[in-house]
Image 1 (tube, helix red, strand yellow):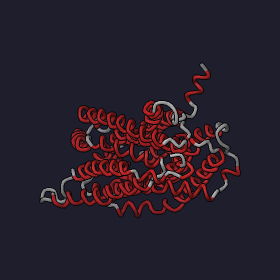
Image 2: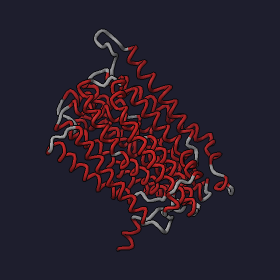
Image 3: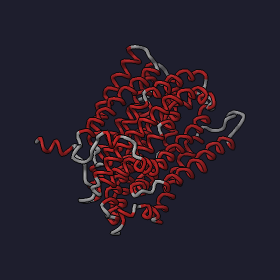
Image 4: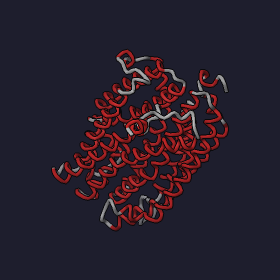
Length: 466
């Protein structure tokens, strides 16, 4: 019994066995973990919406795109680390595996310090630039400031989880995250309902919970000495490994940055429609976060799967897994789409008692519903390309769909629908533009995958036998 329990927390070798079984087995714990992580922001929204009010809910929502933009550097480091760890794990290269993990830990410390010191001074100027209403500006500022002061917890959790996933261990991070999620919920209610701390209370609760999950991940890695070494000589900066992590990770970070920047720019448009639309957008994005989790989980699983099999020089197995994983991801998203369409209003009512807000949010969510199937294709095939070392192609696709399509389309629809009754145009432009960008992104990703240029990004040391 004890040996079976230990096997649950062991790394998974995805270079053997049926591809779809390995992908699904790896995805399920990660999906549960991603859902739990999404609970951080969702519980924040529910607590402030219920105990403080709709304006506090709008404040949390207005701060979120800025917060996501601040975290993109860690997204890049995490992705670069995960790719290299999975490839070195697949090729049984202990030395480079140890150097990559140590370099990632060092990079995270430097990036955390930079954001904590410099970005905290830019909070209010950025909020003013985005036309944040005065009624919620102070709440937004305090929310962001507290997150920046504790950003190392979120940073290290994301980086260390990326390393664990690269090693094929998606279950340990799940357990640690579930512990932190329960703590976050308890602290949210305690700080807001008990101490009356408002928006600042939910930010502080989340920071504390994320720090605990990061510590637990680090303790797990220290116990994996049979796979790599975590000695001081590996944690010291190693230029070659750090540059490789950045070279592979920064395009993924740039992809997230582009998406987050687009969200920030569109947030300015959203703010122009007033508090009710801002609050509706918050609710939609929270539900969207859960609906998108399977897509992100399958995408990350495909990155690990492709990385390990590239390291093991099994390109045919990479292609086989890409087909099977994408079909499963699309089927899962189709089921979620049906649930959103049927139970949309019930989901929105969790966040607020304001009936007008519930109806508005449900109607707008129905616009996005079909887009989740398209995103399943995008995330799965992008994951394969990233795992093979091609992180640039997904970046360019993201640039096209957000900068060229999503942002101009949102503002364009708003402009052409202006009337004396609607001087800012129709607020539906926010979600219609997002749906169109998702669909076109899936088409571009599928086309780039079929062209096969991602195969040329496979390191020669891993592709010699292909």
